[in-house]
Length: 100
Image (tube, rainbow, N blue to C red):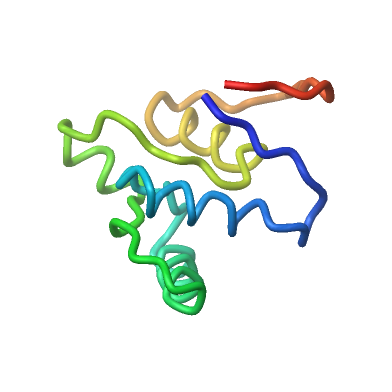
């Protein structure tokens, strides 16, 4: 798993769009609005990416084996709550650099 750790506005989403274009792995989008934003940004950047997937896509399509997650601090708890009904009370993230 690759981890892109940067401050807000420093290009994490751009890196993930490039990763999605190169790997054909869809990006998880928390809703249709975010899906449209990702598609527009990819288009402006000149990348063709697979359509980002939402909760409904993940629930309906059991053939999806990999996704790319943007804003993991928000989306991973949302995925756990959506599919398992479990609310995340606290989280921890390491600050050291992680490689593949």
